[in-house]
Amino acid sequence: MCIKGQIGQICAKIGRNPSEITIVAVAKGRNAQQIQQVLEAGIKDIGENRVQEAADKYNQLHPLYHGREDIKWHMVGHLQTNKVKEAVKIFDLIHSVDSLRLAEEIDKQAAKINKVQDILLEVKTSAEESKYGFSPEEVAKSVKEIARLKNVSMQGLMTIAPLVDNPEKARPYFRMLRDLRDRINGLPTPGSRLPALSMGMTDDFAVAIEEGANIVRLGRAIFEG
Ligand SMILES: *Cc1c(COP(=O)(O)O)cnc(C)c1O
Image (cartoon, rainbow, N blue to C red; front, side, top):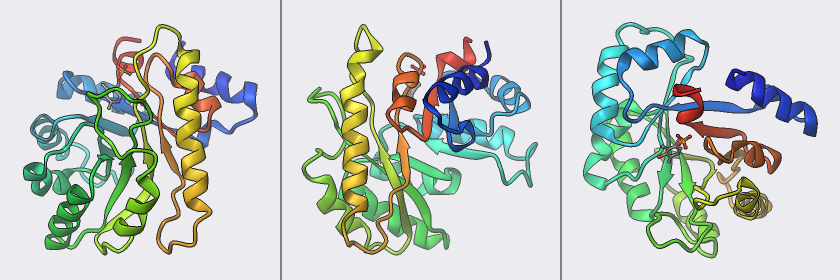
């Protein structure tokens, strides 16, 4: 079944409206033609994890879809500060802001092109050392600091659940992200309303949606589905 049908079924089961869930087609390793097929099939959000790879495909596709304001580009991979200048030119939403320093660099480069860059803060919900992200303990404080930056706009939180053999085991990490989001939204920090929860990939998106995801990042489910 197509991905929208699957998400529709999951939502029906738990009483959510599928229209509140953005499907990001994560296109790393796929070519511009494959992305074009996905766009023709009605998915409007494209995710990439490397700036240079994204730029190559963006430059091929952007002229074809010029004027299509509904097509959005998402950065989901680790972003190095020396790539920020290029990234702010391409991406509508950067999911992977994992340090104050990176947020400051995005603020600086976005200001130069008169943009307010939408971002998510990546949270390291599991203790796996290979992963980037704010610790759950520090994220509320970082929200306060980043809220002061004029050319970034925080939209929410993102996490990558650990690789597990059963998607049920990813549930606590998704729940932790939602709880963190709800707690931050309860704080009196101006400019820190965080509606977005970017969580769930091909193997665990059903559980993520049950736990409140409103952005899912799907690679294999879309390109190999
Ligand atoms: C590759 C990737 C995805 C998509 O992975 P699939 O398991 O193929 O759905 C999602 N998020 C990030 C950060 C990724 O790097």
